Length: 190
Ligand SMILES: CC(C)(COP(=O)(O)OP(=O)(O)OC[C@H]1O[C@@H](n2cnc3c(N)ncnc32)[C@H](O)[C@@H]1OP(=O)(O)O)[C@@H](O)C(=O)NCCC(=O)NCCS
Image (tube, rainbow, N blue to C red):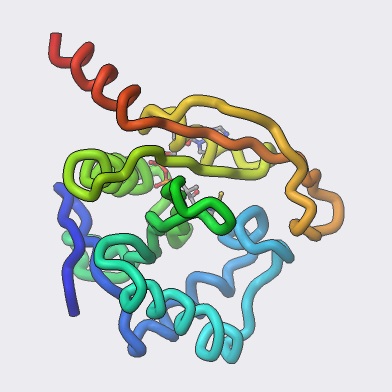
């Protein structure tokens, strides 16, 4: 299985058919999916096997370097979740960053570490021009990751597809262009 990139503590690799259980275990935790799935609810195994995993795998046919990447913690050699770095649905010129990790892996800086590496690779090797990310306002951990990796607030919008009762559909979009990224790097180097 092809490794896409490696950070200090993580390996991001391609998904395979054998990852159905990993994805099911991830998506069965209500705390993981409440702000991440459109329904806010856990996913049935059959949906993971027949829809979600095939959708992830399709990216490898369509794109050399964009798609969904399984995150493996080097220390334990275990699957801890995933990142996506993919052409945004409806606007393929924007590369959309996303992440979903098991609760046991939260709070260790892993989402930040993986996202930073993807952004750097995108701007330096993949001809990415603009990286975007979205989250519900109700999901401060996700928004904090966007801020920590240098994305800037762009706009608020209503995520009409999100249907979990009692949670606001208010959402935000953050973005970073290649020019801004290079300028930020330059200023850090100074
Ligand atoms: C969002 C998610 C990927 C973050 O992963 P992580 O590895 O814990 O993130 P990091 O450790 O890199 O950074 C998290 C940051 O959010 C902060 N944070 C966490 N919970 C928070 C909260 N409730 N309010 C404010 N900040 C919070 C952390 O303190 C940390 O910031 P800091 O380093 O300045 O202290 C993880 O919580 C997750 O998988 N959630 C479920 C799936 C999901 O919501 N995905 C995003 C959909 S848009």
